[in-house]
Every structure is written in C-alpha cells, then in structure tokens.
Amino acid sequence: MVEYRELPEEREARRIVAGELGLVVDRFEDGSANGMVDALIRTPFGAVPLEVVQDVNVPERRQAAALGQHGRRIDVPGLVPGWYVTLKHRVNVREVRRQLPGLLLRLDELRAGRPSWASPSLAMWEQDLPDEFRRIGVEYLAPLETMPGIVMLNGEGWEGSYGDDPLNAWVATVLEREADVPAKLRAFPGGRGDAFIWATISSDLAVTGLMTDPDVAVVPRSLPQRALDLPEGVDRVWVACTIGRRRGIVAEGGRWRWLNCVADPARALGDD
Image 1 (cartoon, rainbow, N blue to C red):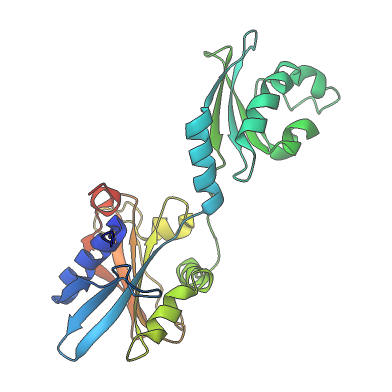
Image 2 (cartoon, one colour):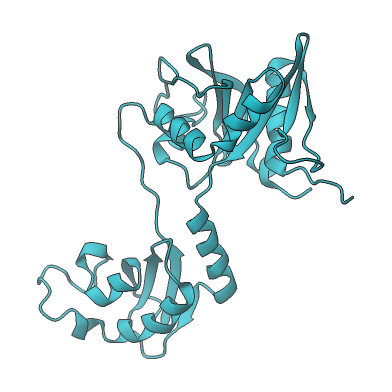
C-alpha cells in the first residue's frame, strides 16, 4: 500500500494545537479507510479527533492554474497603451486570450458613445466596459502607458464583508460548506471533537484583517465577544491564516481568544 501523505497544513495545524494545549497531537488518517479524521489530540481523558480544512476558492485555483499554463502575458503588436486586465474567476482563460487582443485594438470603436468622463486613459471597472468585454468575463482594465503592445492578465480581486460579525459568519459558512468536517467528528467514538480552519488569501478580507497579530497591528484588533453556536459534534474551532503576520485564534466555551502563536505560512504550505 502506498504511504498516505500528510498535507502541510495538517502538519502545521497539529503543531499549533499541540503547542497551545501542551499535549501530543498525532497523525491519524493514513488512507486505510474512508472518513478518517486527520489527527488525534491525546488528552488524559482519551483521544479527541481533530479535522483540518482549508478555506479555498475552487474557481480561483482553477483560474490560477490556467493562467500558469497558458500565460498571464499576451503580446499584441500595435496596441497602445498596453493594458492590465483582471478576469472573473470562472472565465475560460484560453477563450479570453483568443478574443481579448482584438477587442483591445478596437477599444475606441467599441466605446463610441460612452460618457465623456469615461476616458480610455483611465482605469475602467466592469460597469464602465463595453458589453463585449463583460461577455468574456473582464472585470477591470487599467492602461499600462509604459508597456505598449503588452497585456497582463490576473484574477479578480477579493472583497471583504462589512457586517457586524464577519468572523462568526465566515466560520459558519466554511463549516456549512465543508459539512464532512463535523460529520467526521460526530462519527468518531465519543461523537465530538475539534475543527481547524485555515483562512487563505481568498478568504473574507474582514476575517484575515481581523487576525492581524495584535502585537504589531497599526489598527487595534479585537475579537467578537461571543463565538457562534457550533454545529453538532464540534466542541472547538481553531483558526489560523496562511497570510503572514496573522495570529491564530480559537473558539471554545462560547468565546474567542487569541493563541500564543503566529502561524508560519511557509511551514504551513511549504513542501516536505
């Protein structure tokens, strides 16, 4: 049987939990059966299961892979100025690369009749773009005055949540989407355990910003006074971030608190 490979974020989660609790946290999942939890926290009262999940945006990951495969740069002779272009995450990158050069060369024609303030020398968001650009999934255009003949592609940016309680709302959303996490904990002997969520660059900006290490943050950071009601089978939720200088947090006993560690993104997501 091929040895089951532990993911880097699983290994780093074990390190964080072990350091915080002062307990041994062992690997458990070895690929020998379906539905195994990732790790076990060895407490004096028995083993507590730990399941690790990463908050990822699947369309963004697919787009990043497609941009890496097909290229982020397009050379378009005669194009003045060059353009920086961001794309919706669900676009077909190859189709964009095929159609975009011709559309940019015809930009003045396609923008005929646009408001006078929408100057082609200025950046344009989706609502200001001709329909032809919106149809292929362009979100934003910005001129590259010093790079004529070049188009640079990137994925769309990320927005933040501005509700009163973005952290609890985000955790609830992740655990609802990753329903197998509480399900695995409920299926383990004892019927309950810990979930560990990795926030990433694609997570809610309000969450990743909140997790900025309060010891170094320019703007004071404070956690919600109360934690969310956790799904059945989840006793505690750990949260760390793959973005640098973010302090880990944990929800237990109905309250959030800071961890003593700042997660190491390189160690979390680096190669073995």
